[in-house]
Figure 1 (cartoon, rainbow, N blue to C red):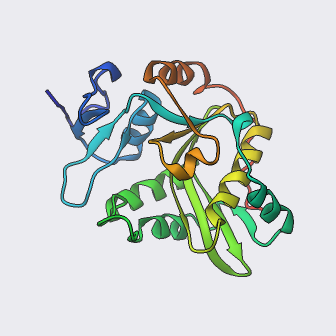
Figure 2: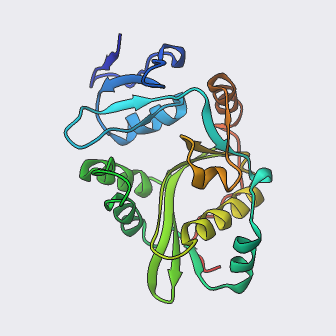
Figure 3: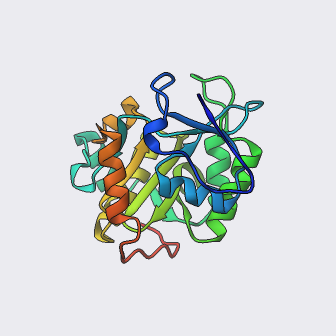
Length: 229
C-alpha cells in the first residue's frame, strides 16, 4: 500500500517499503519545499511525476550510479574534449539549464520537470545545494546538466544537449572536478544507454543506502565558483 506523506512532517517510509512494481515507488503527496527535497535525497529517494499527477517519490532497486574512477571516455569523446570545441562553466545560469532540461524531447510525451519543480530546484540552487553545468558553443548554450551536491555525493537530475555530445562533454568535465574535490559517487537514479556509455552501473539499493550513510556528511573541497574550462 502506497504511503501518502503529510505536509506537517518531512519523514519518509523506510526504503524497503518501496514497491517492486512499479519499481521503486515509495510514497506520494507532500510538497516540493526545499527542506522536504533535502530530506528526500538524504533518505535515498527523489521526486518524479508527470504534470497533473500527485507528487511521487521513488527509490528504485537497483540504483544506477557512477563512480568517478569508472568514468568511460570513448575515443571520440576524448578527442572532442582535447579539441576544446566547447567551453564548460559551473553555476553560471542554473535557471537556463533547468528550463532547457524541461523542454519536450522527441522520444517522450510531456515533461516531469514542471514549473513547480523548476522553482523548487532554483530555490535549492540559491541555498547552495543544487548546481548546474553549462556547455557553450561561443555564447550559445548547447548543453548542460544539474543536480545536488551533499557531502561527497552528487545527485544528478537531468541533462540536455542541443549539439553533438555536448551533454557528455559537460558530464565528463563535471566528473573530473568531482573526483578532484573528493566526491566518491554520482547518483544517476535510473539506467539509460547514454549514462551506461559513460560508465554508469547498477548497485543494490541497500548498498546505495550504505554509501549515503557513510558519505552524506563527509567533507569535500568543492569550489563551485563559476569558471571557464
